[in-house]
Image (cartoon, rainbow, N blue to C red; front, side, top):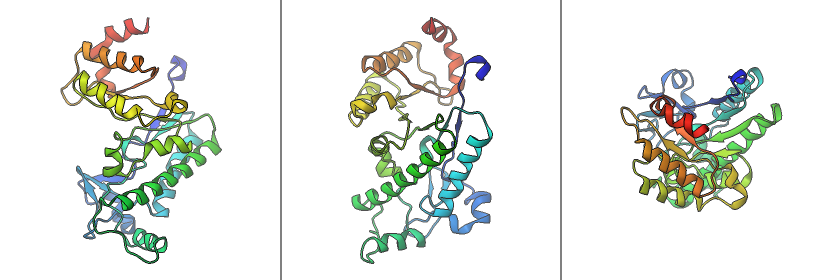
Length: 262
């Protein structure tokens, strides 16, 4: 890739998810204490994905070790956490470790039984932000030039559903680039969502913002005119970068991208 002037970012796509409708898979089979638990004590599952407990130090250190192993051993240019790192469905956090940690910081009061309680959402989102700070530091200590990025869900839906507070990640300097998944099927929805997401980005951090654009989903591909309109919407907002999801969709726009580059 480098010979062809292409930079490579390692994509940790599953993040804190450990399996897909497999009761936690091999990881939870070997480490049952790593399971994320909902208010009923069940393994957290959302949209088919089973989840590890993102607040547990062992799980966090395991994840950091995966990132640092790749940074040490491969000549990569970046690492990315996708929309599942840092993340945990907001139904999680009712395991013994997290409950006890919450009690320690709240005069022995238990977490709210309502998983979408605002203060409870904020407390858990802050813990994931702290984790990202540790991950960022660990990567930069090994190789400062490696870009640390994430492609979270759009804010604030991503915070209430997955505890992702990416505007805070930017403000704290815990991420080099954020790529919100602005996957929309018409230009008006794309423009509206783009404007909304930019409202959470300071002028100083705008260079770290790159919208994710949908160019394939199953058998769907946008028209070339819609693709061009999305890129033009980015440029009209002084956004100079972007991300296309996903790779195979590029082949549907060969001529367009070749001419665009020229």
